[in-house]
Image (cartoon, rainbow, N blue to C red; front, side):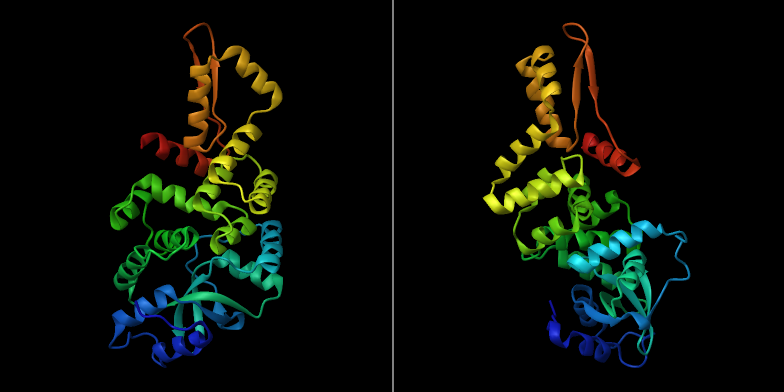
Length: 296
């Protein structure tokens, strides 16, 4: 796949786009492939919001929190922009990151740049990008996110296009829900996708960050991380109740369900062989994620 060196990227993109940005160059396919996997630092002053953006209300406190994260860790997931003229760009996805970057006082932001009328070629280039063996799990998740946001695909449609299970798509996208410092650790190889998946089983960000630091400091394996998660999710009182009420077989089932679904599953017995399996969820996205895993 065509690549552009990072230090030459901004100039390279301008050269590829040329003065007439509404028409693709003759080597459009190579250009799209290059731009699909390369980022440029674009001045914020040259970027404008998408007037067709359906979202009009942005939580200011959430934006300030994101701005603080950007100051500390940078922008992990680049924006996606459409070139609208000479040195002018319109946001396709990433308006929250754009607004937070303004609050953070940044002069420029990393971005993918699309040329007009290249949807089919870009989709093909992104799918080809996913097949590369040297991508880390976070880069794959970002590419999935781009396909979903730019082409309005469902997880099922995405699975068909890239030849993966729907649950694989969903679980990979969940990596983008992790705190920025953990995402950064995944990107740089301090932890693996297995570690990240285990960390998602913890209920709070504080617990996730504490265990992440322990993984890095003590070089914990994925199996050791999973054991820490299991112990954290079972409080002493709940653990005592489970030992009293559940047999070894039921406890094994409960433990396996928690591991497979990444949620604090509880089995409550009423009588010898009657009871309930309780699956908590925090919001609609979590509910849909659990449904997809159960369907699989």
